Length: 361
Ligand code: 13P
Ligand code: SF4
Image (cartoon, rainbow, N blue to C red; front, top):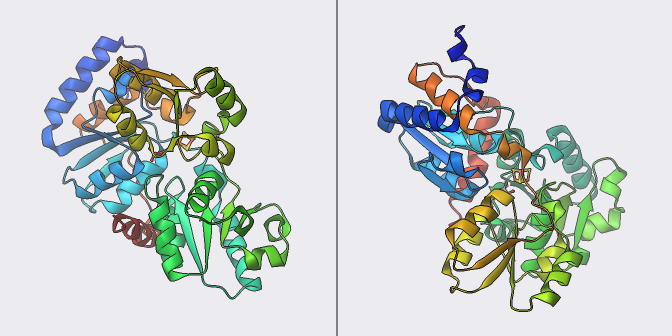
């Protein structure tokens, strides 16, 4: 591993056409042993080499169903962790940059979630079901598995909440307050039955009555990328373009979700725009790589991002062509770098919570 050509920096210095050539060669050499998965926020050059693309739920289902020995996950760390949890022990999951985290997932720490759980249970005897958004660490998923709860993604959050309310009186939802609020409100739960839990304050900043009365308790996490979209700008844009359709990801805040025409996961956004007639005008609130790819893919439709600038996910951007090329080069040489392994301490409980989600649909 000491030669210059065996270092990630050497790959960074290579021109794009050479990286593409190396990736194609490594893929050929590894053949059916390798499966490359890519989230929709990857850049075009990385997406070009993925075998399957999807939203978090779609990719988790593909990971659960593949027999490939090596799964290279072009996405963020929690996605690769989820894949490791649901694949067989002989399969190995890799992420080309293990530091590609997720701002939202980092909003909740397990010790804070456990403390909140204890505090809530001290003042109410209601049956509480915990739900974690898949954008969270494995220990959060294990917590849900061990406490009668489940995982959800942006494409099945309503089904997860329904599942929870069939079994309990209250839902404790973390870490994304916006997905939780948008979903609960969309199912008819009024805002005064939804409270926010701030881990830095006593009882999350709520009075005991509010906690006792609440049907949904939301962690106060958010995604810094989707936080960039705002309702005031959307309304201004809509006044100028009354025929424009607004489509947003449910990680956007409540005011944005309320003025949108459509809301759903990245896969839903792609599908909804793909099905729309030529000549329609779409403004999209989600990460720029996906929106720009939609523009290229559907030149017969007018598609724009719902902001004056292009919000992008720094974490997803860490998965570059050079890193993918280096990852595959090392795998081809039998060097299992950047492997993602979830400790058995969390994997068992997390698997229960993920499987409950996979059984929803
Ligand atoms: P999707 O599951 O909708 O692709 O969302 C994942 C994500 O991280 C969005 O920010
Ligand atoms: Fe996490 Fe937001 Fe990036 Fe999605 S866009 S991976 S939620 S930081």
